[in-house]
Image 1 (cartoon, each protein chain N blue to C red):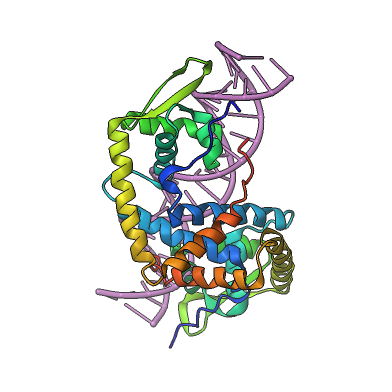
Image 2 (cartoon, rainbow over the protein chains, first blue to last red; image 1 turned 180 degrees about the horizontal axis):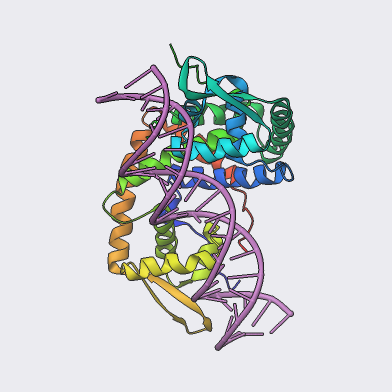
Length: 150
Length: 150
DNA sequence: TATTGTTATACTCTATAACTATA
DNA sequence: TATAGTTATAGAGTATAACAATA
């Protein structure tokens, strides 16, 4: 017992601290869940939004997910070069790029979703259905539309 | 109604996604709360652990917070150069550095804590006391000691 | 004028490997 | 051998400013 106890002092009652730690636990588990797929949390989120809203603009995706325009560029490039999304000039607005998932993108999304879902069940194995629903509800009430990028 | 609706597709039922978004909301608010203090989430967390466990080693702080040895170095340097923590060779183990908060460090911790506490009350203004306690409990059950750094 | 996508850039966070000095 | 701190380094994530093309 050489080690000091790990009391976290004033961090204990702070919701922000515990959100950060819990979020990190899920982030690590996400990485393990999609190991070998070359996917990351951001890419998965973008792919999910594109698949749900085919034809959506690059900027709109960023606005939904809280990613800045400037940072969307290389992320979309990654998904495009991996053959997971297609992009073409929006006929209604020639400045904009219209994004759609490819067949490979849809397959990747479904594969990853199933892996992640299974992993989340593991992390939440001690949770009742009510507790999980309660957690999602409480988190949803925190996510009041935060600042739009830019 | 030029903009597509922002439905997030398969992200909706994933706890990890909502943890990440909620965590970001709190991180932004943290930054606004401590504006002008030169403090950041990591530095505040380290300061809190050092203040709660005076004499604790650099590596032990990292273990409590999930920060790797290599990354602790510059963080402790920042706190030291800001005059918030003092460090001296541990008499019992001459490899280790024993950390204690300075008077300025204790004052900074208390000032920041009060600011953050006030801000968290704002973010959680729609939460009942029971709901906040429930959220902390559920998050605590996720933070099962995650992987020790290194 | 405002907006879409883009480039360039910088800072923070996180990760690995290798070194030193102690244990 | 193992551990504490350190250095160097690299990859993500995130931030701002400025530009061209289009609205």
